[in-house]
Image (cartoon, rainbow, N blue to C red; front, side, top):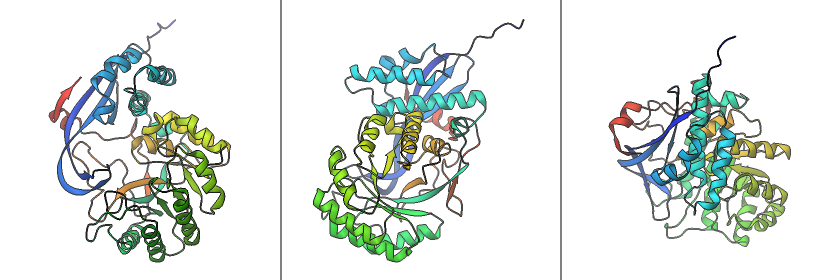
Length: 391
């Protein structure tokens, strides 16, 4: 009889904080805009098993800090079988209650994605294949940055119209507008939002699906007025015009509009909160993001929840984890590529990557990577050379 071989276990959990560059700046309300290239820091979470196989996930330093690793992540993961991913995730999730808010869903998402990456490398398979392998490419929509006051940027409805035309010409299957937000002095403005949406519709014609993310600033009456304009303009969905914790406000809105209401994006509660939105008839399309849902499997569960009700579930934001889920489900139509702006080169590859995670082809599709794991082509030599601290 062959001798049984012990299964590998997680032997190390580590983080490197490293310097990289970006051309994005953030305004006083946290919205991204084009700027001059400058240095920022990112964090790389690495899980290593007893055979030396590693799984990695890029994250914000605040979500994989030393206290989180020492207090929660290492005690749960060290010595455990990485294939027990669901059990390990549940153990971490149960620790959230006593963590005084330090163990958030983004921490869970980083750990869970690193586990998937490790499993993919052990099996020699891309994560999207392990999740189900529904499709190997996903149509992309162009998702704009918020409006600004920059000449030739996104300062006027005509700017949005010209940029939308450009995105459609590049092959994007649809366009989503993020309109003006504070600290722009006149924002938010229902009238200006309507002008921008009308200008884009006129520019791209009737056959291009359009969406609006109004960023939760409006009252019921303003949200309804804007939504009725979207009905006239034949928009594909209407996203986050009000505070999302008011579920009944979204039910009230969805009942009065022909344009599908999508949500929630920012509400805490992961799968449970989204089940409540379905039960309350607060949305027509469900919304979930891998980082805010606690990882790939929670987002996949959410998509399957929507599928059980005959609903689409669209993914919030991009990245390797999002693409893994999209490769495994049938009820998510698009990949959100952005945020895009006339003055920002979204396709420029940051120095810590060897190639882009989500390149789009001439026909507007993002092809799923066939490399093992999540498929992010990290430049580990660069990251090591630019490391400023680690734990």
